Image 1 (cartoon, rainbow, N blue to C red):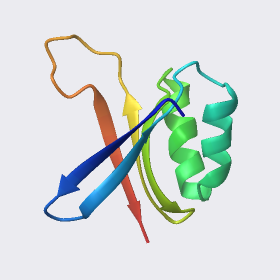
Image 2: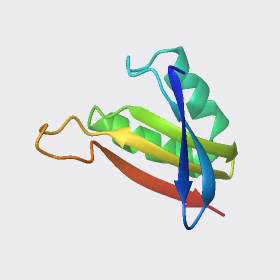
Image 3: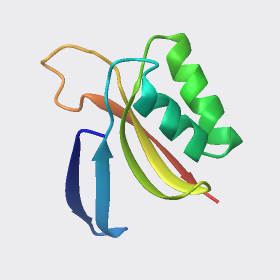
Length: 88
């Protein structure tokens, strides 16, 4: 993990987001993969298939998390990651 951010959301209240090391299949990526449930792991695998790494995580437990992926697009695009929300 490289950094922390606090975000306030009108829907979710105060949200802690953790930046993830972006060096591919390094310890940080693997550590977070093991903290997620099977669906979250499958989502990470799907993004890995197109060379997209986990970028940021909001994590409460293995079944309640939000994961963001870097998509490496143009700097003209303001939002530089996709969001996948998992709440069960």
